[in-house]
Image 1: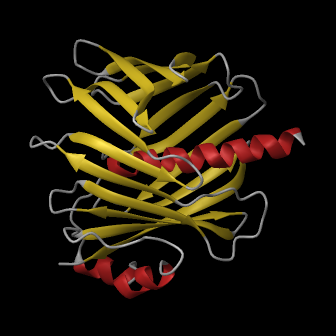
Image 2: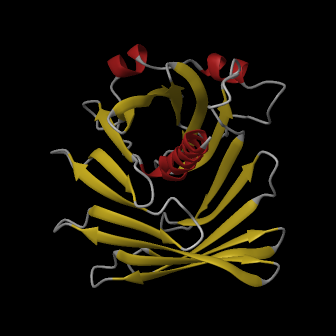
Length: 276
């Protein structure tokens, strides 16, 4: 039972992490040959999402990144991230695969909508997850466009407050997240970061007094500056996760492999659809 619960926690955490970081992927221009060889058509996208969802292609979308996540060689989750002409992520929709029947594959319908300031920074992010009240995130930035404070609202009440401690280069070295329940402090989680000389994250520590999944993440990069490997070591469990990333010649993420204690547990394919 313990291993089953741990696996469900891992799956939920990996899905949420992937959704939250989707808009940080590098998005340089795709060649026409790449477009033809690895894209799902717009008709395929709309056929998958019909009566069971409110999925619509945004009018100002220039292209879509389709993400297919496989667990134990079975398609688990399908996600669509839409970008505008400025490479801003404007909408993300994620859903379980239609033939999902495995109890290990815990996935949810989830969508994110984004609004931007004139300088290109995100002003608001709205999240709607299945069987949960919507969340609205608002952001405040330093003078050089680094997130300094973040406030999340649920049902018009504060749900969490994030305060960032920045170093001399405005990189966040510590994020403290205070979660509120019934207008009282419920729990506090902390992220601590270490960087290399180019300002890239090398180490990320997650600390919480009410969570068994305290962990440390280690990042390595390829020669183009893309994340090549991400290793997560859990403090209170005999558990190590390793994620390996593969990119095409335009530095677009095309493949992601997940390993649990050295054994492959899932993999993800990324495809792109261009509308212009």
